[in-house]
Image 1 (tube, rainbow, N blue to C red):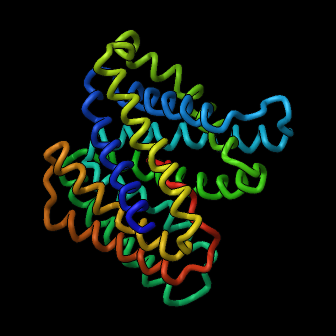
Image 2: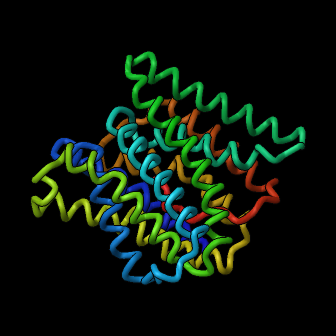
Image 3: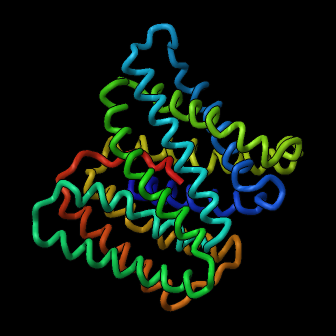
Length: 281
């Protein structure tokens, strides 16, 4: 089960790295559209939502989550078009960390907040010194939307007894991104190579990790799952280095390590509800 989560994390991050290879053709918005559209088709086929039987609450919850997914994926893809993947994912981790720490009243949790802050400051220093703060802003927004996603995903779990709600949310996300994606990529979205990469990214970043983590969460404790997820920033940096040749400076490595440790400590001490599936960017 541990291996399934690790494979899922690698799948998400290598998918994100691969997505950047088509940015020059269809832009981040076009790549985001291809990912969400392909993932939504797969999830709809697998879950087959019963549209006519849905309640108002189910429509509103899945719709809200879909809009958040759209914004989260768009801002994340725009972030990694400006800054390295490992840096973007690390900064984005402020979302889950904020959710984990928000309900805590323990003094020890202040340590995790301080470690995360120091790590993010270390990463931000390198970015601002290089003169490109745009990626930092997009990554921070993606992180805040990730926090909203976690809270809404919990509501989705209460509104639906199966996974059809997630399929609906993914469909709403794809429709929300459609105008921007088509505007950025136009007919280039249908070029076979570009379309193929976009579909592959959708499978790697959404469909595959969703399936793997669904199996893993049936047997793993939420603490164990959270500990494994703390490896995500490091895996993202590794993916960026392997797929895109992005370098990792000592400062970057330190920042990523501090945020990962903060996430690890927060997960070990957390008594919160189960982590949501890692279909986020």
